[in-house]
Amino acid sequence: MLSVNTVTPSHLNAPDQLTEGKYIPGAEIYQGQFSVTVDAVDGKPGLRERKKQRTHAAISDAAISLFLEHGFNQVSVAQVAEAAEVSKRTLFAYFPTKEDLVVHRLADHETESARVVRARPPGTDPLTALREHFLKGLRERDPITGLNDHPAVRRLHRMILDAPSLVARMARFKTGAEHALTEALRETADIPELTARLAAVQIVAVHWALADDNAERVAYGEPADERYAGAVADMEHAFALLENGLRHLPPQQ
Image (tube, rainbow, N blue to C red):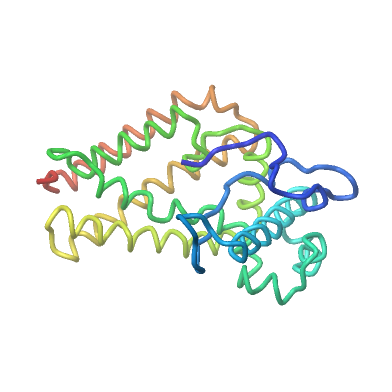
């Protein structure tokens, strides 16, 4: 699950999160995953890997700080590199595109639905597991459901909504989620690939439609607590529609 930390992270030097001497909240939101690619000792990353992780975090946090303060389209990659005190070449080694500076923080959620399906208890069908997971996210104000009005989360969602290139990049993220869920359904529900793919596309579309609606409402001023009841009602309606078409998906054996 995504978490929001409202305290300046201790693992970063102050200049990494300062813009003109002012800390910009939000740089610590959506902490992304960074794979370990070098040898570790006793399960802990080595010195070289820790340095790479710090560089990765510094670039990402500097980018989010600048984007939230000035706007995604108003900040250049060169400005991000300068704020993170790295070269453009180094920045692109970690983040192939400008959009990746934002979207990578959601990377863990690309396979979230697939993981929920694979981890569901015996006797639980995929839709029930996914419905309960989404409802839990709403209750806990998980930002991935769109129902989180922390100021920095709201600003980040609004930034994504207002930047066409980020919206387009998120569409690729959505496709990845569909592929991952297709495989999870095919493997655990023992259904044909086409059936799994059609189901996954519908399920992911519902998740995204619900989250997008919540995020847009909250981004433009509706408090999350006031939106909660409506968000739950919309979720129940959406999953009822899915169940009418997908009720024959078998439970986990």
